[in-house]
Image (cartoon, rainbow, N blue to C red; front, side, top):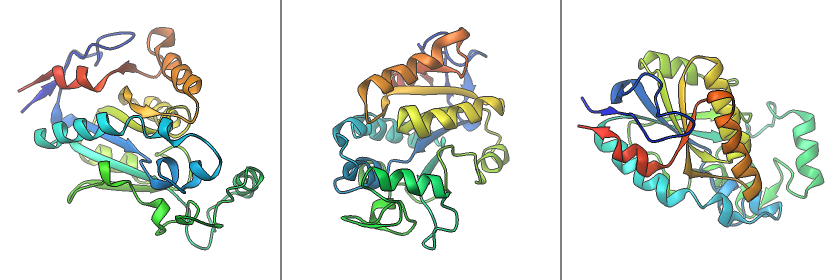
Length: 229
């Protein structure tokens, strides 16, 4: 069984316990959806530069190939709401309307952030393969109103490697939720992205405070280099 660690990371070599078997580790691929990183999606409709949210795709695709060969558990998440919008908070809908991309409204990629629509799907570069877990979530954190914690504990997972978008919102929220549940977390700087470069950098910096308040930050190449066969 392959092991990972110690990974060259900040603020300490990850994980805290030296190294971890692959079968106790999961790769989280958070919200790599057209709505967040594709032309005509939610983020694009709000007027943000999607090259910033797409920046982590090549490194994530390379890391996916690596961990799939190891047999690591891969979990993908998708943010979206049911077609009737029964799980869409009124304030979330209102805020999206103010910026010109109302959730549930028709857009170039179908109804914005609605399950089953083209924009809600994960982009081809990092799409799930057969046997990988897909968690659908109505909010920013992947643990809220989902079965993610149950899935991870059922598989005996204790350590998480996080990729996805956006660094400062859904990825950071999920990392905080995971940390509170006792998971040892590593966020990858080259496999994440945000709608603002400053926010991306700040979100990564926040992780390193207080001795690693939410875990550690590393690059995907350091994870690959720290794999012990």
